[in-house]
Length: 381
Image 1: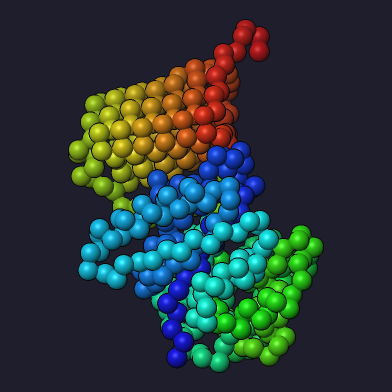
Image 2 (image 1 turned 90 degrees about the vertical axis):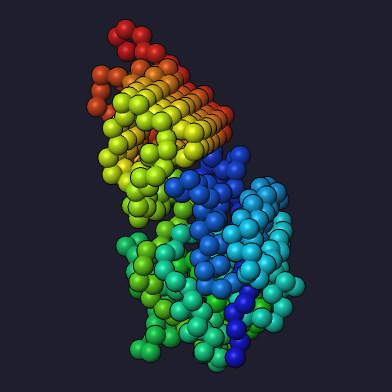
């Protein structure tokens, strides 16, 4: 029986859909509930028993990915001293030439082992072990894919199935989708995938598509399993997608009464599920959970929530935020309009700002690291 013991985690690409934020950081390191997206993928694989990871990285963000995963690896080894040490092998991909290309260049690492591939900017709940067990038991199957119904299948790779649940056809972003079953960012493969990739040509967008490679397996008579995912799946490639992921993770976060008791909360009202980091101070604030606040934050006369994540070392004074992700060391001071549906990179400075103070609208921001936004409306404007 072919046991899945290796994972191929895709953490390359340029993150163009999240710019300008991703000019300064890897999209896989954008935080959701104050934890990098990539960590959720690594945790899911770890919990499924994987201890050997190959990670695809790009020239632009590879060093940051390596540093972040070194921290994750150290934490795992310290937290589980009796466990088999996990191994991480980094595999450079010079250009974002497609998912199938990433698999092909990883062959020296993967060898002839069965493996699971996980897209590092996806969030998927549920246990992967069942998916892996079914694939390990089906020794005559070359691949297995995870599917979920979606409302807009033309934006995804979609599958049609036979009566036994086998995959009959895969199409990448079809104009007229034959089904509403989209590929989730988890795949299982045996070595036959390498021959299939060698037989396909780049798509119209110049990439080797993994959907084409799996279709090649089917055309060559290889079996491809499928499973309908029963939980949720979130692709965090765009700002609104990342905010949706933040809301989802925060919604499942239990309240942390201990962290609230340990924080300095002077004349502050707290409702719902809230987590606070060490040494954070709140004065005359209103926090409506779910909200997570990092370490060493200073909040004064601020209203937060629901659905707000605040990174370490943030200073918020006389402002209101909802449905937003604020990265480390940001400062928002005396901002009259509410800030909503926003994503701010590290060390941004917002305010003072009273533009629109008399309106019921909101500021909706997507800011790169070190951005500055300030202004005061003149009379008549």
